[in-house]
Image (cartoon, helix red, strand yellow):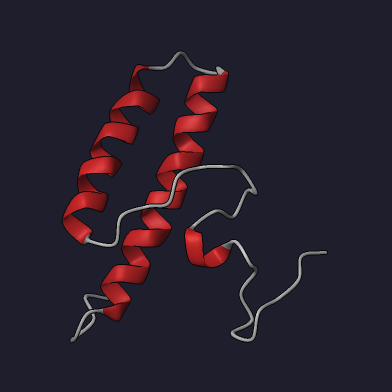
Length: 80
């Protein structure tokens, strides 16, 4: 079981690294995240169905979307 930090998050939650991979950290701005999201969505859509590339792109999309949500909730006023 993963250890929890004082905030109750897993140690990888701050970096957006929920799957325990060595993925690079995500940018902190919404605009940069949206650009990454667009590129990851294009990679996922271009990959063959049931391929490892499609699964990896889908996981990357998930990481980016979670980070976008964090950024939007931190805005004043929040976008969500």
